Every structure is written in C-alpha cells, then in structure tokens.
Image (cartoon, rainbow, N blue to C red):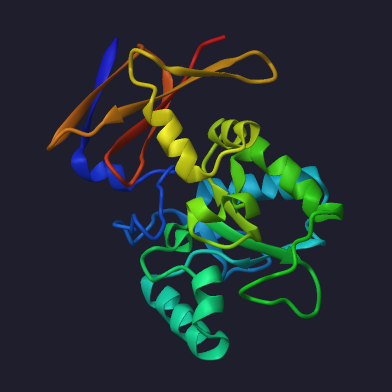
Length: 251
C-alpha cells in the first residue's frame, strides 16, 4: 500500500466541487483553461471537460448542430452578468437563472451552457430542448463525465430553476452514478459521504470493470489517504469538508 498527503486547501479543488448559494468558490483561478470548441476561442472550460465535450459532439455528429454559449467566467464577469440581469430582467428572473458572484459553477471552468446552432441565441436561456440532437447529447453526456446540473425536479435542492442547457463536468463514473440514481450533485456529495475508506461504494461499468468511490474527511492541516500500490486514482475536494477518492481497480 502507499499513502498520499493532502493539504487542507485541496478541499477547494477538483472535478467534484459543490458550488451553490451555500458553498462559494474559493479558488477563483482554475488552471488548464482551453476553448470548449476551437471555433469559439473565447469560450473556455477546463481541458478535461473540453476534451470530453468534443468526444460527445463527435460521437453524436453534433458539431454543426450544438454550440457552446457560455463557459468559464471570472468573478468580475459573473458580477457583471448578475447585475446586468437585475437591471434588464428584474430580481425574480435573475434569482432563478443567474448565480450570485463567486457562487457560480461557471467560475470553476467545469460548467458549459449549450444551445442549438441558430441565428438568435439567448445568452441566459439558450434553446436546448428534450428532443432531437439535444436529447441525444443529454443521454450520451454521462458516459463522458457530464451531467445536466439543474433538473426541474431538483429545484428545491439546487436553489436554481430548471436549466436544460447547463451541463457540469464531474468526471466518469460519477456522472453515471448520478444519472442512474437520479441525484443532484448536492445529493451525490451527501450520498458518497456515507462511504468511507472501509466501506467503499463500488460502481460496475458496462464492461464489468469496478471503480471504488469513497469519502475522506479533511483533517485540520494535512490528511493522509492510503491507496493500493500502482493504483490509478483521482482525488477531488468537495468544497465543504473533505475529499472524494476514486480508485480504478485492475481488471
């Protein structure tokens, strides 16, 4: 066995950060930003998310049908969007569809708003229906690490109205676990917290490969995580109080 040591501030980085009205973003400068689509060089997301997005669009032959509308936003950009919407659309609309500055997933570089490729695209609420190529994207996305973040049935939990255009990269297999269990990201973070190092959640993919997922509470300064030798693993902070560890078992 081997061990790794994680500093306390690492709870604020990773693909599984929970960002909402209760848990603000701490790391406001995400690394590895790259264009979500080479045709739109100013719309950026994190590299892993961009690669996964392109794989989905290639898989369903949707590059001419679906376009990125909004990706990474700085704190200043989110603040401007929020207050411009207050002025233009009023408080009720803005509270439903625009996150407070430093409480927006867009500031992580892990969120992307998508829309149908058409002449007139609404920046706040782009058209992304539940049929045709958009629904094909929605069904394919969890196999590549994306979830539809704000479902209509989860409004009371997420605090955000239904946004069928907003997708969040959490990585695989977390995306499939979330989809198969009908969870919001808030519910998933709570669900995984019930699994510790000695009681791990095991996810079996279609090819019967097993992935272990579990939670480790953050210590005051440093946290030690024990892992199998030569294991492939990933660790993400949850932005609250600890880490979600993912270990891919050898076949």
